[in-house]
Length: 137
Image (cartoon, rainbow, N blue to C red):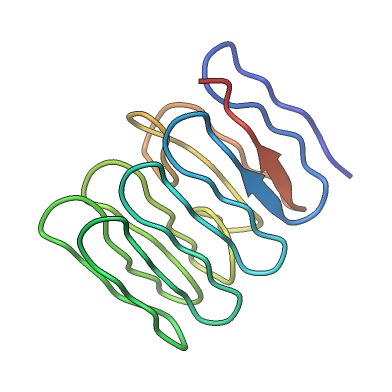
């Protein structure tokens, strides 16, 4: 079960199992169990159980279960159930249940400006069984 989405500008999606997002510029999400978000500039999230947010500049959050981080400007973490990252501007991950990128059922990626997770418009990817996202730019 899988598919390959390759927009003319931005993402290349090739699901296998779990999810892997590796943009050329922005962030890197590679979950198989939990997820791993490593933006080139901003924050680094690598949870397997609970969530672990390690920004390159600003704050460091490592809760055992869930997390809620809301910086005045930049990135934020506000999960409802599971892990989630909701930045006020820029990149973010906002799952509503379990591991995922703004999913209601499975995973989803939808940037607004630059690369992002859980934006209102832009490119969207919503697989129900894992995915690999590797943007070309």
